[in-house]
Length: 290
Image (cartoon, rainbow, N blue to C red; front, top):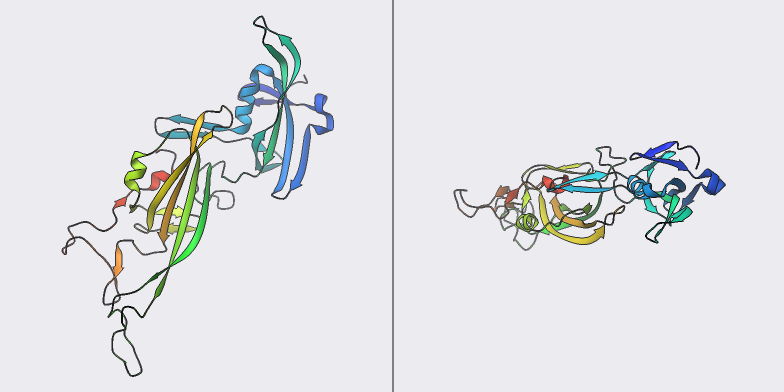
């Protein structure tokens, strides 16, 4: 083994030039952009530690998630280690138990652009729109067409000038967006608080991409989960997808009154009752503590 020039979580590692020659580092440009394959060489006993450094992973403590970001490709830091190929052993030996192990391992690492943000940053060019690590966020703009109550609008000319427009005549288009945010590799199942918060609206501002949504404009609509394996250890984790429906600026508890004004409504006339949608702090869905 050549003199190690790298250190992965305390394990000495080298690029396998002696064993792989000009195939030790291979770069290519695929349909999704640049990719690279690197052959690393380490002690066989260190192979899982090396894989953990390359692929990253997750650690759960209570309800807090700590992510170990995957390794970056030095020539293009936007590329992350997204998979490990077939390991190759060098210099086999038989143990007293009859099991075979090797002195060294060749660990092939594939670097490409992940669909999720591997770091979590407010840099809009390199971060997921939620600014949360290990997350994939998608948007779908949709208009809401609402019919204002009769008397909200008036004809201002013609035969009916000065008369109210009937409530079935006008359709107002209001900007709305559907947000689907998948938090990858959560190392514990979630249920109770999510169920409680479905149907609630944000009590604090929430930021997605370049839009800061004011209080009361984001509705937590649904969630679902898929079991997955942590990439370096196989530990059971879950990908959770949180679905939101957000108004551009109007609070979900505000409605058009017969005078054409947006006003809050309540279960009691004096405002001491309950609004249709309960306010809850939903910011934890974008954090690392659930």
